[in-house]
Image (tube, rainbow, N blue to C red; front, side, top):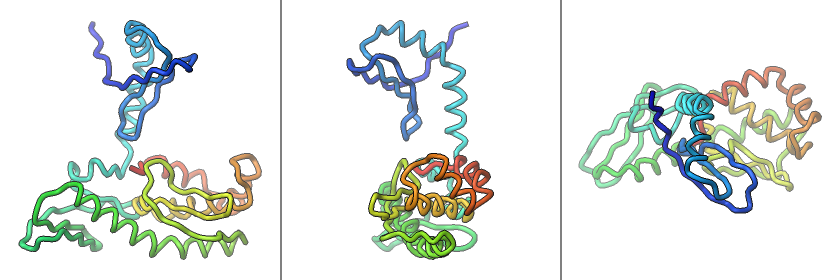
Length: 225
């Protein structure tokens, strides 16, 4: 039986002592290693084939991937998938319209990059409208207040808290169910008091949101990119 090796990117770093396997934001297998032979790489891939398949399956199952938005013809918003329609019109500008049943991108020239800008703009606008009120709600309960709230699109983090207690939220949070967005808010507010993920941090999160583990499980079913 002949095994088909997965495609991968190999990064050689002479400073490394071991070989590491991971997946990048695009779902591509990445191998980082010192200089090794091709036969060693192939042997490693065969040895790790079960883990590679499991991880690929898990990544493929994650919801809300923007790279699939035009393949699946759907857009996630607050945990629900809405049908996405592309409609050509005579106006020379691209516009995005969302309602409670579906969403439509109107275009004059088919331009995927331009479409994504429209979607990004929609998510950012919704995040700026919703999240500050959630921060205020939970900040009052936790008696922890940020110095500032910022929004940006990120491929890796859902949120962050700076040393100066500035909270930054990924605009892609708007893909998630409301209860999961609230968990991210509580998580970042907790960092105002604890700048780590040690026991005291998680104790504060649990005291504030006893069901946070269930919300984290839901969070892990989505991708920020």
